[in-house]
Image (cartoon, one colour):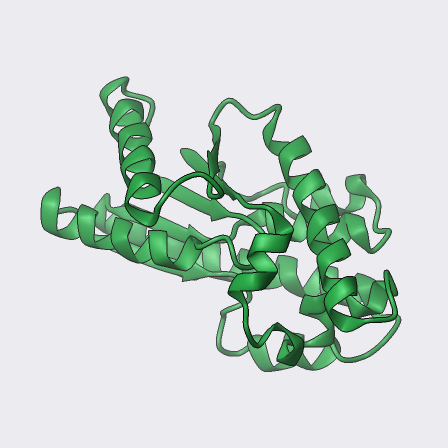
Length: 215
């Protein structure tokens, strides 16, 4: 299986991925690989560097797509073939699609970049109020200008700009996942960590029992 975890910053994806990893390994005795957005070692320094430069939106888009493609070919596909295990992806192609759209890159161009990506078996979107998300990130002002969306000039204040950026991201995410039958929206605002985890496990268990996962 490939399970994609998506959501704006501060939604709690990392915590849920760690708990899911332990559940698969300890409870189901299934091997797990975790892959993260923009994490291929030889590309990360380059990508992080261009994010500080203005006017390089297309370059960032291409670099993110390349990073995903390399990780898929070198890590994800070989792991699935060799182990029949589970890939837990901390962000997937949807992160690229959302960020590209906010920077004025055409949906057709962006979608074509990820046209060869494997479709996840399940997409878990952790939906959180952007205000609550920011309150969870005590040191958010120290994040990179790209992560804060400062290149979009949505507000003069850093925190206000970041808030608007997260609001816009959330709108696009929800629009994308409203049309995908394998995407599930989990309400972070009204659920505890354990409640969210139980909902995620129930969804995955139900999905597997129905035979909808790759074998």
